[in-house]
Length: 149
Image (cartoon, rainbow, N blue to C red; front, side):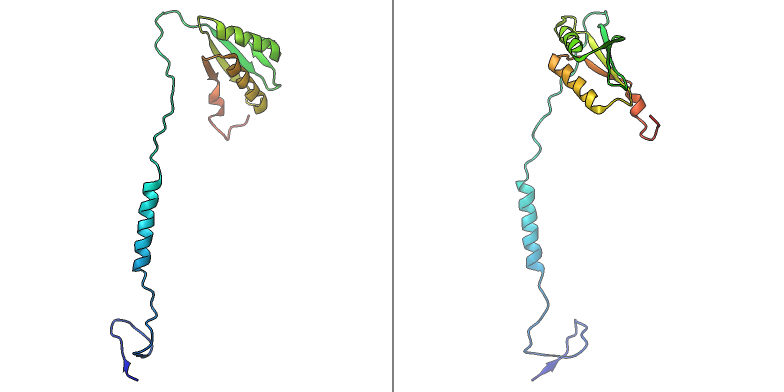
């Protein structure tokens, strides 16, 4: 048996010439992984969907639109233009407002201590009534998360 020394590899001892070479050839593995990466990139569809946003148009008249104010206090009571309302009366007012041809605006303000569930119910009620001009007032109080409520 002939013993040879390798010059390129640093090995602790001599190896026999007829022993198998035990290093893994990773070049084909890298080639396969690159091909799979390219296939994955080509198979992912490009973002083609659009989100339609209705932007407000300029008003033709100089008269400001009428404003109705809806306030939700900490107790969960809805207050329409400084008048406390139950859900049925508020629903009627919102439907009337939606049918008004002058398209008044609704300014919706919420106390920071109000329950989100009640807020969500009122937003759903506004949407079901068909009110389109809604603005959320007083959100500046929620800008700082560390501020006490």
